[in-house]
Length: 189
Figure (cartoon, rainbow, N blue to C red):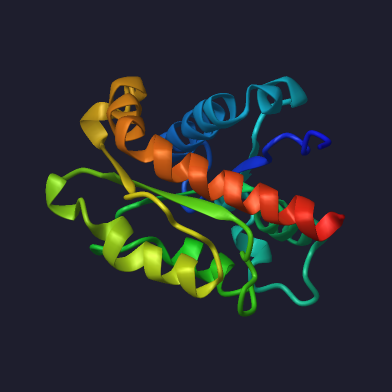
């Protein structure tokens, strides 16, 4: 059986501040997932990162800009998609919602999504589960794990928190990515 293509990992960051700590955490998680899920993916290059802060003016432009179309494709084409947001008004950001609204039904079908929420308070630990997960599932993504919530105090060194999350997330993520990749190979035959 031929070896499938490397796992394509992307991060979508809904923080309205360009170069945010949410962006750094999402990029770090995407790199970690790429290496752990498929060591050949790391050799293929860095994970794709879409920083919506740089695309905000294009979200409502008509016609769509080439940069926005490229970002929409990069996110939809990901095998594994980290969807990162800071908590805003006890939910995810409007910027992220505006971007996700550009997809039609099943626009993220085939993607295995990992919600990543950055919060100042542990009281918002369920934002990813209650608000973000249903939107991702509605768009056709598979969300096999609990969201990863990082507190502001943990952003200086996300590795220990990611490692604790990985202990529970590894098996369901591997199954979801493996099942999707096997199904894609069967369709290609």
